[in-house]
Amino acid sequence: MQAIKLIGVLIIIVGFALKKDTLATVVVAGIATGLAARMGLMDILSTLGSAFLSQRLATLFILTLPAVGLCERYGLRDKATDFISRLKSATTGRVLSFYLLARSLASAASLRVSGHPQFVRPLVAPMALGAAKALFGRVPERAEDEIKAHCAAADNYGNFFAQNCFIGASGTMLIATTLSELGYAADPLHIAAASVPVAVAAVLLGSASNLLFDRRLGRLCTGGRK
Image (cartoon, rainbow, N blue to C red; front, side, top):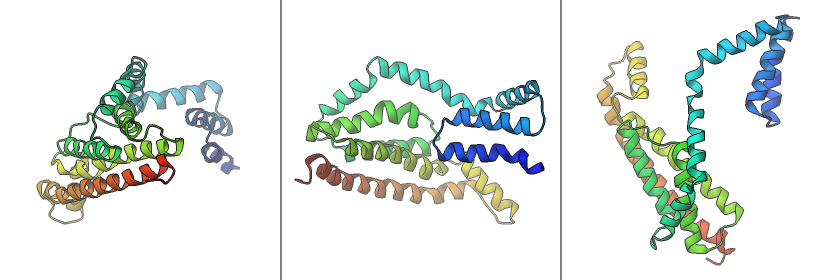
């Protein structure tokens, strides 16, 4: 009968599989687990509240959402789209390649000034979409989804592959500490230096992928006429 206490795990698996609201699924799973463990309702709520307060730093990203919403409400997306539409040489692939380079340089300097909710959604995605509309006029829904996916990918590539170029980055220090504990001589400076070629390769390969995406985007937007 002890296995019944694991019912919360089952609820989370089923809830995620059915794409139900994440927060609601977790709360229901917590309450179900508490009831299965014969906890009182007030004890369950107290435990959930204590867990939320102890992990509140992990939810600070939520504070960015109202700010982004206000910016979009007052025309940030429209201004970004209008700006990129005036640049005759701009294409979606070039916009994404420029952002990939900028994101990589920022990550290499440990500047956390961007991300999906703060930068990609309100600025990069509208600019990339605006470049496509300026070239092709109409952008089908499928093409628009692929543009958004490439925008998110550019942010991921720039952040993931370049962040260890900074000697004080958490990833660099983790690698150095782990290698030292295993008995290997590990200098954070050498680890950061070894990360530079990886970051450069990520920018070059990512840019090549973006330029190839321009060709695919042309076929998607023109029905294969280009």
